[in-house]
Length: 323
Image (cartoon, rainbow, N blue to C red; front, side, top):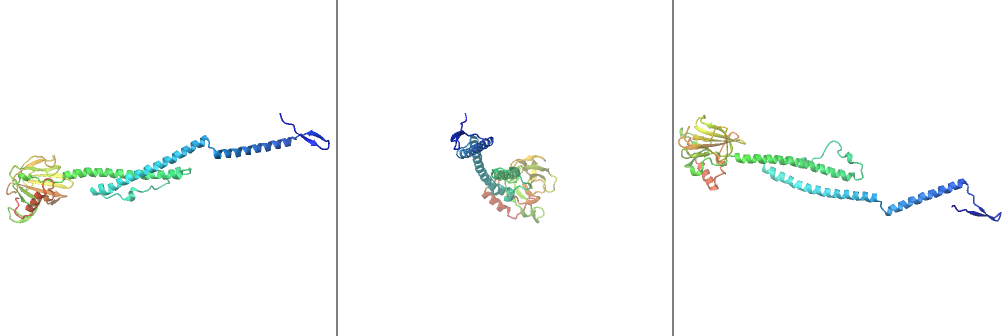
């Protein structure tokens, strides 16, 4: 029940009831309502300044979690960049150096991204700068990983070719040293046994009894096994690939046929004296990129340093060749 208010009338010397007009009542109501709203706003501001709502606490926890993850991702990316840097250094300074391939330029490894703004969709947010930086770093790292993976693919291919090359190089003596009578003639100027004229001898002559085994000096494919070449008699030609070809001449018989694939050390024929020959021996030649080279430079597979020096000394003597 509303309180009744009175006022003292000095003219009538009595108390009279206060009668409020509707306008005054409405005015008082508005003043009360305004005061209440102001009080509520002040109270809310004061309350929220000292206390957080459950939703605010949840949002704050989420923001802290995002920042923590960003820090962890930044740290992990730095670790990945360090590991990648080590792989890149080994790639340029070990692998590519070993296989005689030019290193990948630094600007190619770390080239940026051209064209339109790739990160426009990430702009306009509270943490846009942080997100854009992280995305840029991930893109650069991904591109470097792609370049490195392609480089390692190439290194694997080069390694495979290198292994094949090492197996193809004519690296052993075609007649075992214990089977030799002597190393009769080397590469260079020699006396022709038939004309007695001085001429260039493009191979090495290994004197051995007829029937002595002759071995392939490297992996390859038999290109010839016939006697359709003047002077060489029965002979074998092996194509080793990588520009290497070897010739085995004056054989008594073959142990291979044309088109057959052979390995280093395989028995391919036997010493003889067929063709233009003054005695039983093997005439052996090495061709590199269609140029006849000195075979003595390739005997690193089955000769000791002392045996190699002795052969080198004998090969340098200008005597008479056997063919």
